[in-house]
Every structure is written in C-alpha cells, then in structure tokens.
Length: 79
Image 1 (cartoon, one colour):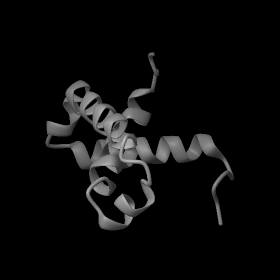
Image 2 (tube, rainbow, N blue to C red):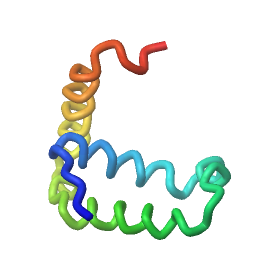
Image 3 (cartoon, rainbow, N blue to C red):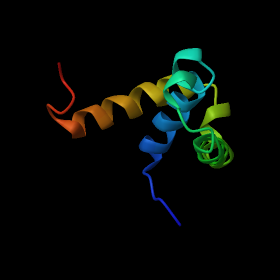
C-alpha cells in the first residue's frame, strides 16, 4: 500500500504525531493496541523522509505549511 502526501501534509502530520503519540489522553483513545504498529510505521516513515525536521527554519516551515493547508480547507473544521 502506498499513500501520497504533499510536503506540507507530511510535515504537519509528522509534527502532530510527534506531539500527540506519547500523551496519555491520546493513548486512551487508541483502543486497539494493534493500531500502534501502524502509527509507529507512519511516524517513522515521515521522520526518515522529512529532512526539514532538522532544518534551523523548521518552525517557520511548519507554520507556513499549516497556513497553506488551512487555506485549502476553506471553512471546514471551523467552530
């Protein structure tokens, strides 16, 4: 199986997974231990493909990627 993501999607998803995977409240919603296998695989694949995570301007690149993706969503997800 292959999943294609844009660079922006990969960057934002990698950051999000890094922030939430080790939180207790996230662990509580993953109610099937087998799902962790896929989560670890996706997270690891993203980390090995994204050289920008080691770039000094990572925060700026992440912020810009988030803004571009949010712009593409239009009103979806707004409260």
